[in-house]
Length: 365
Image (cartoon, rainbow, N blue to C red; front, side, top):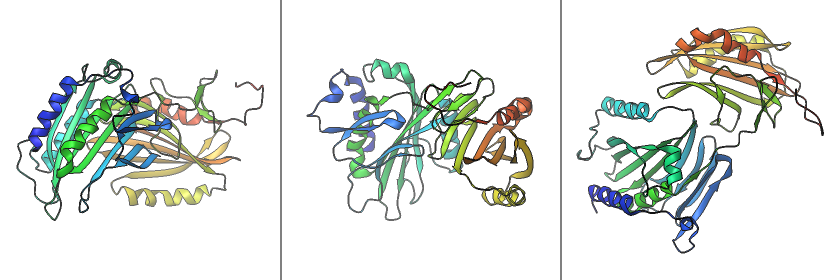
């Protein structure tokens, strides 16, 4: 079956798919459940798709699909990233990347040269019933679909499809890559997996205190967020607290807190080393470091000014130690937004508190 034919087959499938309450639980459909509670994700996939990774950083799961023995690609994955970015911005970015790579953005493009990844399509579409369950349509409304073709050094062709779904504050990215021989059949299962997915709100282990602080219940620290910011999912195992602010295309203002076991910190030495450490990761960054007060203790404050694409951004990172932990509190913001709200954003960093472990019958204040 040609690649164009499979697209027609997929379009026909969407026209006839119907979902009933008992469809996901059928025992004779050759599929099994993959559930990742931490990410609020539950899907059904073919039995032959092997789960090889799950609940790691921003990745809900990675499944390995059967391929020819000589194939180098064959997997299905789901990633979750924070923020309320718009799908149009992602579409524009993908089209721009394709133009910069001089890849024709058309499904009728000729086969690409070895090692070149060609964008075949990128399209935004409304979700509609009965192809998708009504609750799924209500949750996401639209989807962005991108598809690429590429060949390896031995002229073996592969295809990749990526589907973006934007929820209220989370972006879900489903991806499938497969060799040409299997892609036509696997992409149908991939689309059925997405249409039948259950994507629930995440448990963030936070609660709002009367003081206005958002308390991380498990680790007993909290911060007050700027107006318009809200707690969100932190895309990393070490991120204990994460919040997002304004959206600037595909970039979001954010606040992240990481922690490690308590140990003495030589802040003066860190201040001297930090500009070089940042420079190794980002040669264009402008960095300053100084010691500042942080809730009755000292903290190293590092200010980093750099760019992401055409956007100027500012990062303020504070490192400090308490009797229980070493903390890194990192606020990243568009430069124009930071200049407009600097006092308020710095007040958020100053608001950090650490509470004692909760005792039975105790009250939060």
